[in-house]
Image (cartoon, rainbow, N blue to C red; front, side, top):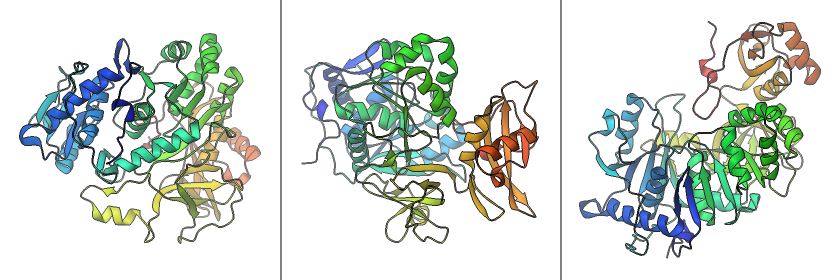
Length: 489
């Protein structure tokens, strides 16, 4: 018999599983609600349902909907409520869900209105258990999560059940994550970070999650002061925390009480690491993953929280760096840049309806080409330097990662935000271009000042040759800088 994804729901105790503000569900209540919804998903002429869409608002209903789908043995397709109608139309046409799960009262956009709808009732009757469909095998789809579509229409990454269980169990090992932990976060629930790690992770451990609904530093301080042990966030959130710490001593005390502070989805600038450490005495742990791979590496709870790195490969994950021709780097010196390739049980099975894209994503011997560039220290620690498509700059015969230049720029006291790209140069091949948001727009640092600043910290060939000043950097919902949107006015 297949092992359940959520053992704590098989024989639930009375502990709190989910909290969204004042709304909570204990494990017996969550078991009853998901039992009932799973039966509705598979009921009547829907017994052959293989996929359901979930209108993934940051609510209790979304968490219940996804868990119910997984318990029914049906793949869930989380939908970003901020998606435009064209994108939604593409996702629905590609994934062909049998129905959509949504919170009662949610108004759905026109692409969803022709789908059968089930309103999610979170008030299952405890003790009135409905027989749940036997969970399918480990290779069966659990989630279909659509990529951002930066190079074309979004692709649906098919995540099997074993990818979810193996990633969450590997993180439990790395982070010493147990059922006694209480996680707080304010992440969206339509992607891997907020949904898989932030909701399914605590439920697999038999622990608790408190979702803020919307991130704010007051909510973080409140929950950590009230017994939460872990915080998940993205760099934008930790940047706001770092900025707030000097004026909010209670926030510093609360963060100091946390067992684990975790950042992901993009690199956390080193200067934010240092500001948080100085104010709280705690280091932020970084991990590295993708939609297609779930989690690949992490700084371990019992390891060194080395700022600027994403730690070591998780248990069960193989990781290597390769040259442009596919040759594996055999010596790790902390300087030589290569593309990350990974292999392991955490990987997706392919892109839905895209065998061509799936084939192109893997090597002949099963390594997934991440497109992320990194260096690796002799002791195995990995440091991401950027995306191969947008962050690897070939200038004057050197391969340069944009990330280290961005970190150097952010150490300048008059730089608030920074991004680095490359542009064609007849002499150098590519020249380094910096896009900065000054701390004070009335008194921005000069181009030569920034070039000298970077040269002193890194090397002269890594200095920016061109500097553009902006009022803000373009970012997506996860706080990642959208470098393809960086163009001259």
